[in-house]
Amino acid sequence: MEFPEKIRLCEVGPRDGLQNECRILTLEEKVEYINRMTEAGVPIIEVGSFMSPKAVPQMADTDEVFKHITRKANVEYRALIANKKGVERALACGCKKVKLNVSASRAHNIANLNRLPEESVATFQESVDFATANGIEVSGSISMPFGSPWEHYIPLSDVEAIIEAYIACGVTELSLSDASGMATPAQVNTICKHVKEKYPQVQWIIHLHNTRGAALANLLAAMDAGIDTFDSALAGLGGCPFVPGAAGNLSSEDALHMLDEMGIKTGISIDAVISAGKWLMDIVGHAGDSYIQRAGKNSELIRELPNKK
Image (cartoon, rainbow, N blue to C red; front, side, top):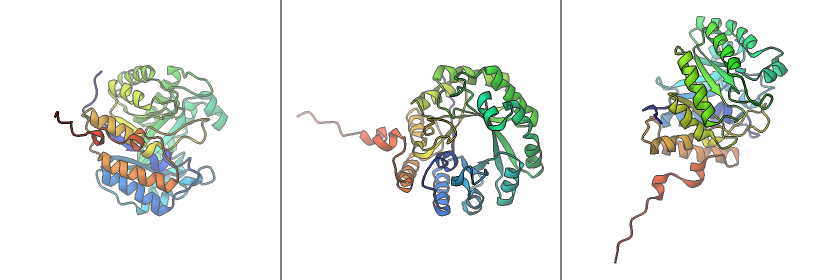
């Protein structure tokens, strides 16, 4: 297997990690979370989402979070949106990058929006045009391209139809999001190699969940396909509230530890991230899904060799 020399991790915990939590963090706690990740060296942070507060009350104050965080020039701060109204909110609070989303599951998309996934993407043009006119970058994501609780396998042709609809809208940074946690390594490797070759103009991001314990294996499989940007969440928290049984995200601590042990650069302090994870678990009041939080780093296990007497 061959891997990139450097990997970029995006901390999606402030959005995907918290949107399923019963305990809603205060504005001050969210700001501290994001500032801790900034100081740890995380290059991309998903601050929250501009969705309806009724649908996702955990994200109701994302506008205020953007206004209060301490930003660094070399860090990308983004938010999830659904439509032009989300872009308008981004513009008002100083958010410079937004992400649109559609499901690759036709059954899921029809049930929720009464339209095919590529038809949903076609409605994004208004949002993209407004964002571009106002200096806001737009990214896109495709949920469940590796599998869906409704159809099980998703035909690759369905995923390609969405990719091409995004490209037609002018969006060329795309995330393949395993929201249902059904992806397997061979499948991830094959699909990632395929889309990289067929759509070289696209910057790819892989978003992994650890629902069935395969997140780290899928990370390696995507890296072998040449992917160098991944989403992860502090303490492995999260899970889509709209997907049955969806568990937490790929743990930031676990991903960092594995990459550090492999000698792959991230520019992120694992010690700062572990400390932040302990702090966050105290805040939400329960343990997350991180092996490193439970077992510690390999380097912490090193002991002095016994002397022969």
